[in-house]
Length: 477
Image 1 (cartoon, rainbow, N blue to C red):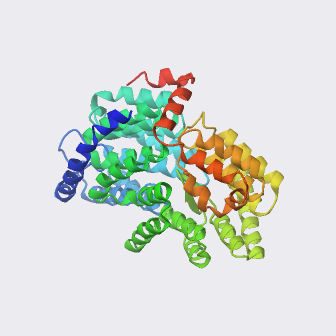
Image 2: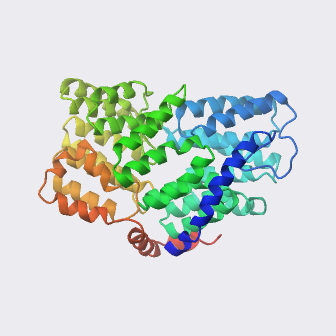
Image 3: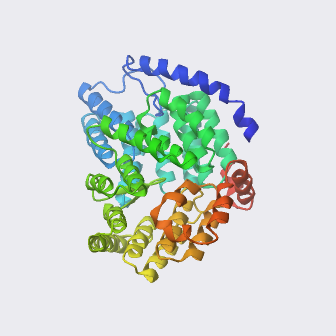
């Protein structure tokens, strides 16, 4: 794989320069649809209703500011719903609305199936209004992707392949499914196809791909292409790369602080990650100030895991010695999460959040049970991209409770395969203090630090060969 990747690095430098020109010229085009979204096949106006068009553009701009931020989602949804209400034949707006609904479902603390049903209706409307529209077929495939129904997602892509093959977002979705299925080499091949079609939009996705493989030099090279096109959504991957790859907390913080100061309404992901870094660095008051600016649904962990802001506040307060206040925050989190669990007992995010809150309260039986349930609900075999996150959180719970052997065992499992977390997180996360004090920590850290790049890819490739879904997953490529 390394050879196939390296031959493209010369192209990245050219793409970065070209992205600057593209970004300058794009604003002059009235119906300009790139930025990673599907484009109409013709230059015909998207709608004859000027107000509908303006509402659609406002929604698209809000969504582009950060698809996983709840404020952006709400703004985008309101604008695009207004657009389709004014013009029910506005196919491109229906497709965008489907994607917004899908994002709200995937990133919510409370995942409402009705939202995903609305996404499917919107996507099917887009396809019915204009079967030639690439974004309609992509939106429908995205709905099935959100349901983890890869077979139907791929069928939707096959149905629209005639209009999709030249769309970068088509290859993005194929790559994301390949990643989930643990087919990392196939995913990179799909991203490379997409990069040839739209380098700026694809660079962000490729960066995240390399972050999972812990190939931080490659991630930074690709990230430069996205940064050259002024894509605001690369802030979090940039900070993540700096911290995970170089343990450079100062540089990561600077990236996030700059982004925070540049926007009137803060991005939840920026707030959450910066709050964590401030906590790691012992800056409790600053971390609490950031937590106070979050909405109740709270902070983010990679890739898209929301949990109550009360848990973050509890962690920071506990670290600052304010134990009574910390317990109050944890208890508030448990109360809210139990209500959510009753409504959706099989959501791994809720189980993992309960594990963290119970660990903060010093309740080992409940904390470990919920942590293990989260891992079982979304195992690495079911989702090779998101599954390792739950291993990290389970290890965090064990370490917080002083269960060092169990924490190390879970981290061994996590580091065996691609995942978003590097050893830098274990080194700095206060939750792992007991693990760091253990006599075997240094040797474990050395072993975990070696699990990067080609080593990970070889292990993941061997693992994917044994999975029955692999052959079917590659059938449409």
